Image (cartoon, rainbow, N blue to C red; front, side, top):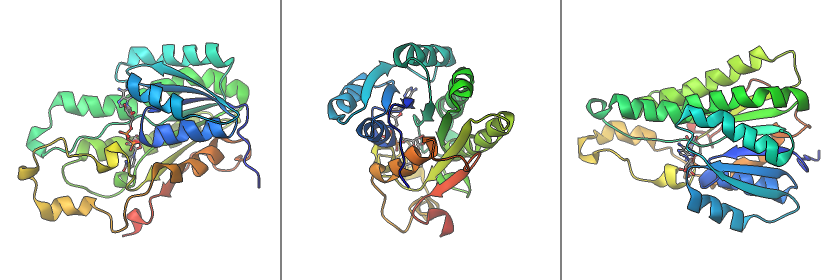
Length: 252
Ligand SMILES: NC(=O)c1ccc[n+]([C@@H]2O[C@H](COP(=O)([O-])OP(=O)(O)OC[C@H]3O[C@@H](n4cnc5c(N)ncnc54)[C@H](O)[C@@H]3O)[C@@H](O)[C@H]2O)c1
């Protein structure tokens, strides 16, 4: 089967790095018109410089931690692209912290970027997606479905993303809009291979080691085929799904 995303109008958040960058580049390579959003201007410029193919890319700096920025991002994308076919909510943040170090600020930071931003971007995008029978793809995580020490805010935010995906799909189930999430395992990106952000000497390594999956991490480019398929008009049957794309992490 041929997956055809050519000429689709797509917003990709988190496009300055990792899975978001790989996704933006894959869309451009396959003929889609991408509105690439991130808080990191320099990373966006690198993504734009790396883009090639029959599609196009416009970059847009925005801090999605601030919910007031979500609707303007979608309005800017619609004005630039002339409509909207897909929203890929890929921006995310992780902090690894011992229980006693988690502050209300760090909890709100993680939930603000990982859960609130995709929700309010989806809210703003929905009128346009209802017109185009479009799609949303969110990024959950294999860590959403098991217990992991020192990452309660992150893992529970990713469980919230999984549930948000299903509930939003339920709300528009009578339309042609398709809303799905993928749940990656360990991905070789700055987030997947970066430091803990917390005080490592506080961590019990017997517990910490559970976060390490048996298989090595995967390159972010391995996630783009499934993302493009979920967004493409060829996907009419996968709706409200949270797909494990974790190289077996959830199974072990
Ligand atoms: N790397 C992994 O192992 C892994 C595993 C499962 C799920 N995920 C999820 O995949 C998604 C992409 O992660 P990645 O591994 O590519 O990480 P990454 O750190 O390489 O990229 C995340 C991007 O999000 C952007 N971002 C962060 N806060 C933002 C904000 N306030 N406003 C706008 N942009 C912001 C960053 O600038 C960065 O470009 C995340 O949602 C992450 O939780 C990653």
